[in-house]
Length: 381
Ligand SMILES: NC(=O)c1ccc[n+]([C@@H]2O[C@H](COP(=O)([O-])OP(=O)(O)OC[C@H]3O[C@@H](n4cnc5c(N)ncnc54)[C@H](O)[C@@H]3O)[C@@H](O)[C@H]2O)c1
Image 1: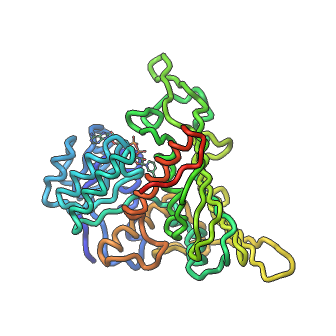
Image 2 (image 1 turned 90 degrees about the vertical axis):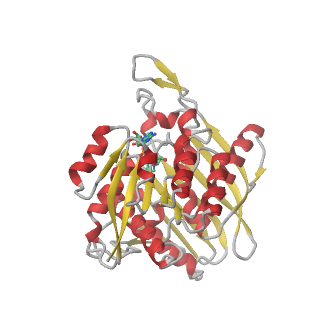
Image 3 (image 1 turned 180 degrees about the vertical axis):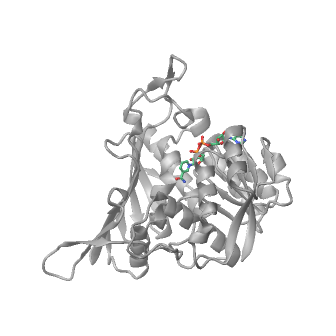
């Protein structure tokens, strides 16, 4: 079993999810490569202490990311820090020759993403991918296989989204994700959008233009110090795009990202309507894939229990449903598989590529223009 020695920069919510996935690596039964966490970096000592307490392999703890990147023991890094730091940290990691899984949106805006893309071009030997676990739920993997086999026929419409609702609570204190300086002008699109774009982009359904309606529904929140602070970023975004299928036919693609979506604690959904088959899935009914196959006659939706049909084989019995932490583990399997073997086992079992991220920046930038001009805007590159 090959070992890839990892450093983690940013040990918050997502940094620790990676830690937990590493601790559960034995769950994956067919991997011939495994991660080992040897170094961690965060200014928050409670978080780095959690890694020290739980991972005997951690030999370097630092508050300075440059120190971690200078560590010759580190082969690869996971960087999970606020968006304003992405360009600086990702470029430094790539220049230090460390393979990188970086969190979305991979740059606070298009200029930052362009900088990262340029750095990637200059370092072709460094393997770089962006985090998005949304395709690794069994139902979404099954939809991927259906796309591969051409099951849908001509595409009628595709709807993909990621919805949150905790910001419905106007008393929820502001955090960095609501501030322009840290989260960027994209707002909810930067935060949630890559997840919703991952499957359509991987399917090759690329948006040509967009009409966006963006909303800032709660313009101020408690600042956590007794006062109020301005919420500068977009809460909700609905993007209606013209996309093109493999045969050159246009169809409507909607990408919806909302922080204020009543009743949706953390809902991923994907719906593909086609002339031969339609399929829809929502993480609200995580184990259920709905499929409608049309061969003439009645049009009836079937409900399929997905169980544990994973891209990367695991110990869990096939009948058992999957959850968020399973999809994170699968995403990490995808990263290591591709790092070690050069490609994922199938088209829909790979992490987001830098080119796909760049496309998302083109889309979100055009969406901001569309909101400003109230017009349909072409997607730039
Ligand atoms: N893939 C997903 O499902 C998912 C979910 C949530 C967040 N994210 C992404 O993960 C990234 C981090 O988000 P989070 O929710 O984990 O945030 P978080 O606030 O929980 O963690 C960020 C960490 O970065 C640390 N940090 C900040 N500045 C630093 C510096 N200069 N050096 C070292 N560490 C520093 C903070 O102390 C904090 O612990 C963002 O890009 C976000 O979009 C992804």
